[in-house]
Length: 315
Image (cartoon, rainbow, N blue to C red; front, side, top):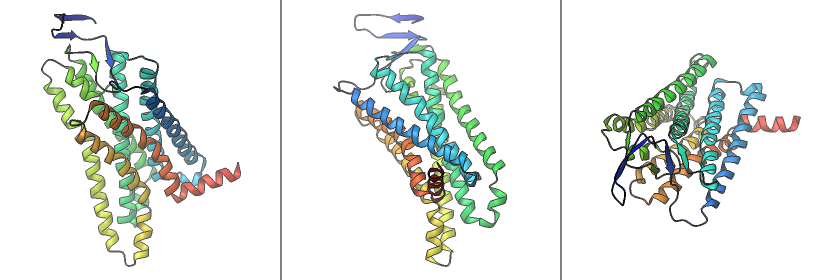
């Protein structure tokens, strides 16, 4: 510690700008190392899957469309998100490196939250692509260009980085902490926030609006997009044409469901479940969508399936 104040022998202690935090992880569960090994195997599958999707898009010129700019970026965000979280968690708990420096902890927090934010925003970009393709098909080539999609993705990255950076900067303004033990499996913003023992109104406001900005607003936009898509499809003359158009959305809808449902369920029940159950819920929510996304795209997207077959045949 830089400075510490308080009384020992069971009395409360406050920490002035701690030099490190302790990530507690699971409490009282034997052989929990097998769970971390399981997470690492999920991570390996995620890396292989997302790397494959990115490689296929790069190798096949037919996939160099605005839509696949967003798909490539989603695979990239998934890869960075998994790589920021799982290897560090593996190191902390399997190799007993639960002490993490103050600066490293905030850096860990920044990358985890920025990547999750980008995953949500990338689903917004893909929903916009489907919205224009189905509602305004004649204007698709004009409204959804490579330049537009690149600009949208870059603006989303800047937004995610800026929002999370502001949250981290406000955390650095606090110096008084009740404890240095973070009851989570990573440097969780909400857990660090609870350790602060001085006026934390700015961080309370940020903590309140952060889920709104990076989860609820993207989800509302996606739901509104599909409401418009559903209305447009209801005007289509034949059932076959409706089904054909809707099939182009199934992969994206699967991604939305696998990303938002676990996150929202975890946030809803986090206050009423045991800390160990909360860690399991949050960790699975963090690692499974990046693993499932490339599998969904390979299985449900005809263009990628054909491209993979073509590349494998050539090889």
